Length: 209
Image (cartoon, rainbow, N blue to C red):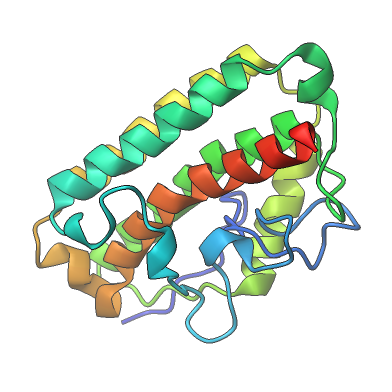
């Protein structure tokens, strides 16, 4: 198998959120708590999984259709949150150690669907995909610079499009395909469930605090 090249422009979700570069261009990952993005991009295989944070269905979300439904539900909760933000909240940067405005962080979730989808497609094609914190940091920093002025309507549309594309990709998998790449496809699906909820809860708590 050939080793996959880094997905420049895919934006790693911090992986989805590594915070190593938050103080610079943006954050490497999605996380404002310093973890390699709510689940992705940690040192070993780049795909850690905190099972306690996998969607409402938890371990029951074991089929492609169930995972897809949970991915859509988590995305829709984030969309509802974004739609309810005031202009001041949208522009605020309430997370300690993370200079990104709320709007950029929410759009980061939409961006993460895209690069995760690219990785899943590569894995399903038999490629050896390397994902680590550095890859995720670079993707997130690139995204933060490009998305600095995103509007709520633009982000909501982005979430709908990229989220639907990723959940459709998962829904189209067989049970066996979920285990491709040593189970990485399934782990990306699980990350896509918790990633929006983690960011939503984190931002909401910071805005309220």
